[in-house]
Length: 203
Image (cartoon, rainbow, N blue to C red; front, top):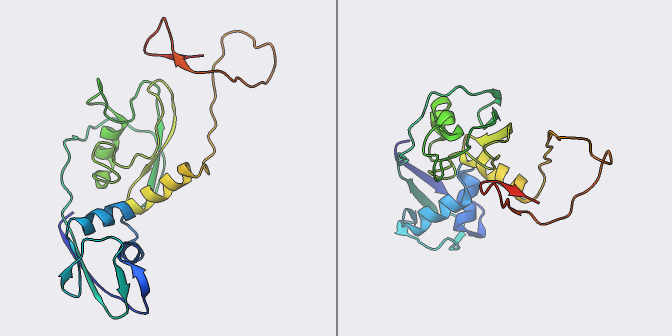
């Protein structure tokens, strides 16, 4: 994305915060990102640079914001097949296979779902962070299942809120070796590092 310069005029504003005003004008950008732009001196009000995110606005003021070009990350898109079960302009739902790591981490610099998603949808670059573009949750490497990927800042912010507010219902299916003594139950115990398999967690 090339640098953008946006100009807005406040109308009927009664002591509204600068960051809140910009969120209403630029819904595709997260509030935290807009606050960072304010602190970086990229927002002016009536020709004067304002660096306080909570600066109060009144009616008939001109607000100008400069949005720098998106910086390229060091993530290189990789042409890895993806099972995309749903996609629109805001998000993708990807069926992650077992054995695939969601995002780059120690020991997994390439071949992740993020690398594959960037090849499928280059516009993900920079959404929600350089190392985890578009990612709002994850599954362990050896777990298969659906992953939600945001395609813009507005969707990223909304999806994060759904997980934070626990409005997302997660359903897991597990393979069991043997026959459980009861058809249902609840396990309440601490989870820790498996003493024999240090890369696994166990109860």
